Length: 146
Image 1 (cartoon, rainbow, N blue to C red):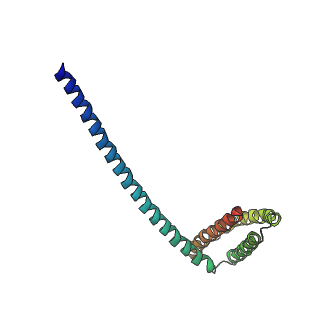
Image 2: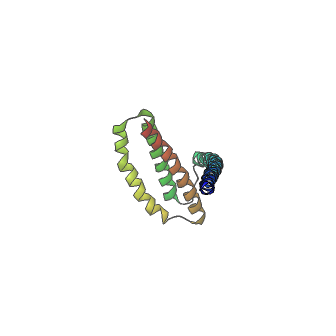
Image 3: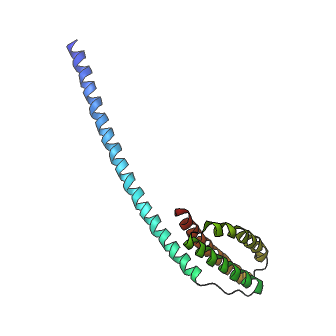
């Protein structure tokens, strides 16, 4: 009976010790995973900053298009963005609501413009609209933070 009791006791101790080892290994794995996640988050943040800088640079220079209709649209869109930025700075929600129709009209017109783009203009258009969209998102974010 003593041997059975001592054997059972030894088995309990081995189980407790092995559980501690498993818990330590799990904790180490969690720490390693956390470090990896932090590294990835830092790299993503750096990449986002680089993209934001590239977008800002692209928006600063409005391209010239061969098609006069496309160029006229871009000038209207630039005026819309300037008005949007002014409203965001003034925090005038009434004026902001008034921009909805202009934005809708510009969106419809953009669909018409897309059919008039030549090969070189199509690339400029895509780059310009991508950069402009990012700029508008930043302005919208400012408006919602207020």
